[in-house]
Image (cartoon, rainbow, N blue to C red; front, side, top):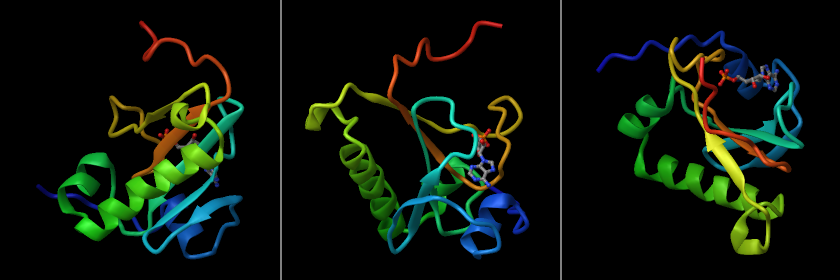
Length: 126
Ligand code: AMP
């Protein structure tokens, strides 16, 4: 599988400190920050620090350490935001867009964490 990573994408620039972000959590291999255009009362983006284009790139090629770090960070965010059912929260949705049909805008893998209201059906019928 060939993945081409654009180092000028906006999240790469955030990781290099060229663009500010509202950080929620930073770990050894991951960064989480608030989405600039929130679609729900809680809308956090979690990204790996490594140069991965999308979910399948990250899942296929990230190291075990990166994979664990990323998913533990996601769990920590859901817990600390108070939305995880396991901490008494009302729930959340994680999603990741890839490619043109997924309507991915930023070509650096990111997990959307959405919560704070009933989020509706999984996808719009078009
Ligand atoms: P996607 O369509 O899945 O690629 O999502 C990209 C997300 O990045 C959108 O929800 C945007 O609102 C968000 N976004 C774009 N630029 C920034 C930025 N500078 N800081 C935070 N979020 C951003």
